[in-house]
Image (cartoon, rainbow, N blue to C red; front, top):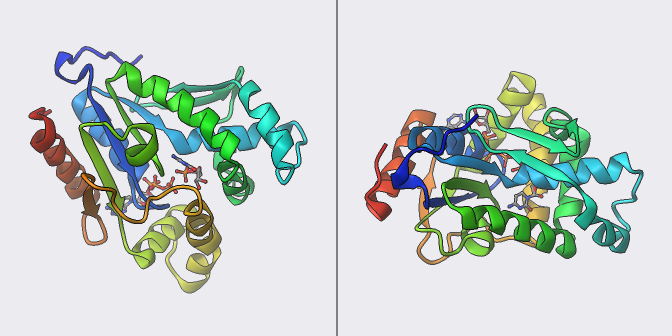
Length: 233
Ligand SMILES: Nc1ncnc2c1ncn2[C@@H]1O[C@H](COP(=O)(O)OP(=O)(O)OP(=O)(O)O)[C@@H](O)[C@H]1O
Ligand SMILES: Nc1ccn([C@@H]2O[C@H](COP(=O)(O)O)[C@@H](O)[C@H]2O)c(=O)n1
């Protein structure tokens, strides 16, 4: 169970956006652990809605039906950064939502504006409680534009393809990278039609992680937290 015992960060909200495979989840979890914050993976919420719609046999192209049903999807997020969980009702979907069939379909759900409005409202409720780092595609601009710390985490296309190919296929050879293009670049192109995560909005700090180790990226984000709020681990 996550203890939210750090009074200095009880009200803090840290917002992180960026394209696929830029390192948002990995970095956000580590920063959350260092600062005693909860961790919210908003991509997992879109994936959970996608999982539920497919499980119910809903045609994702039927945007009106998806829009009518999204309010019923009982997504429950466990926000302990050491062991985040995702349930839909009583079903643990943490592994299922990472399957390639969900990655291939999730942008269809995420580009449904009624779905976005529903999930943004749920995410804003969590942000309003404070004590949380939230990562996704529209956190710095839509979900928590007033957050004191807002970061756009980027990396070059080649680096992001290599990271995902290594994670999914254990290799960065040509065939592994080619097999990863849909998961990374096509998804970014589709997602960019409804969220702005390729360029930083005003007041958002950019961390380009292309040439940085994970430890260095975590340190850079912690430095930004200290610079913007005075709070250090
Ligand atoms: N600075 C880094 N150097 C090397 N590898 C990294 C770095 N940052 C993240 N990674 C690796 O890249 C992969 C993608 O990272 P992660 O899942 O955190 O990205 P993400 O931005 O959350 O992606 P998505 O939005 O698609 O879920 C992981 O295997 C992670 O370990
Ligand atoms: N704030 C967000 C977060 C995510 N999405 C959509 O969910 C997909 C999965 O996100 P991952 O971070 O797990 O890769 C992503 O491709 C987007 O379609 C979003 O729209 N807004």
